[in-house]
Length: 394
Ligand code: PMP
Image (cartoon, rainbow, N blue to C red; front, side, top):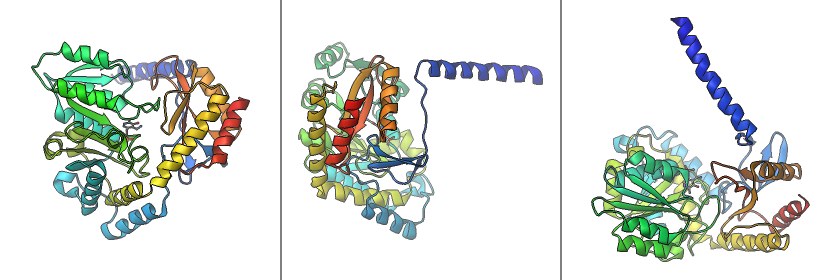
């Protein structure tokens, strides 16, 4: 009996090892690094210092003294652990304050904090639709949105990237027997481009569908006060009823939120399993978020500077003949094609002291491996010029 168990265990371990080695052979193996010190324009890895173009700290807030102080003070007054889930007794006054500030930023009735963006998307989709309903998503949506739809038991269809006539055809073929949910990224995380949001909102209204936008990369970076694509396109709560943002990117913190009407938020509190069945985030994180929202709204110079850096990079890269994508956001990918080329380019930049990540399938479609360059308001013009000159050399 023991032998049979052992041999079964060995078989599955061998299968897994084979999968890992196939992944390595295909240049798709993912490697993790251990970083020393804070995130910012400089990255410290294995005793070396690199100029970093790979984090999502778009506004340079991850290491802001006011945010650090807010967290430290809340640890003093409220301890560290959340202690319980929100609906038991883990909902602290700092969570409440962060939600109120985010409601102000988003211009929505109410906001609900989640521990991560992944959980917010899983929770929101599954609270809003289920068996007998219909979900429509852009092909390039983030993995957490796709996973949320797969979990929901609703009929799930994907439309070609930003192809709204395709979406319209799918909607026209759908019976009126269940709820319809249209979901899009607000800024596409690997391409940096935007959805055609006003038209999406119009389509949703025409077909009586719920529109949900995950603006993980847009909040903080676009819109006059950092309100993301909803602010930029001036879409109110009726036109865009379910708005998701994450707090680990431009806000420099951790966590995520869903913003919407009283009805939407109460529905999530009652039904979003990734909200109900998990420990609340540490109150100090919520205190840091509340502080960060103030900085995001007040310090528009960070967005202005970011835009100047992006423009400088794009014009320099165009002069070099690099293949850029249709993006004016801090996500500026350079398309290289196959996996080996993308890895080699990333390694050469690393040798020159620059950290730029290669992104490969399945995160992006096959044949579209790329360098994913991200900018932060902490970068200087000289940093951009150094990147451009390194790109020219490779
Ligand atoms: N949505 C999008 C579009 C994202 O890019 C990410 C993070 N990569 C998430 C959701 C997940 O957010 P979090 O890291 O907070 O889980």
